[in-house]
Length: 201
Image (cartoon, rainbow, N blue to C red; front, side, top):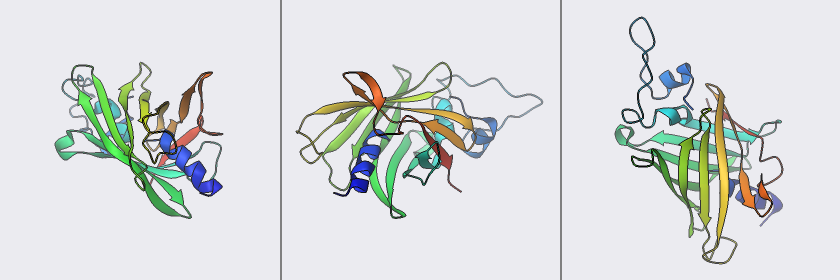
């Protein structure tokens, strides 16, 4: 495995708020009607509303600048019954699918349950966890990775990651990739604490 492909593998393991009005209109929420904007629907009526700003295709790159490291996608399931999520790494300008799975509303816990298949070129790796919205609108993806015999570690091992999404514009989202260690939460790789997603044309 080359140094670049090893870094790409590390990045992709780590990666997998109410939106702005323009993003909501373009990417899934109904536009306001009447003379004033309606009050926000409750979670029971629109449980995915706080996550809808993520729907679309995104380049993931260092916030400081540089070429995209990968492509992240969020798509609606039939009748918006769930969200399909995927991540591909970019190698020499070509996409290499790495993980994909589902985000499904949990009516008891009022958040999304997450289940992903990871390392699609090899398999036997799983990410599970939750996706929720904090008080300031930041979407938080809490991740437990379950390693398999081809995951680069011992079968049955686990690791904990966290990724956040904070919209700063309809087509720009700040994100990161953090790993839990004995010293607390640290960047999964140099610079992974400051990443940016920009919507693909």
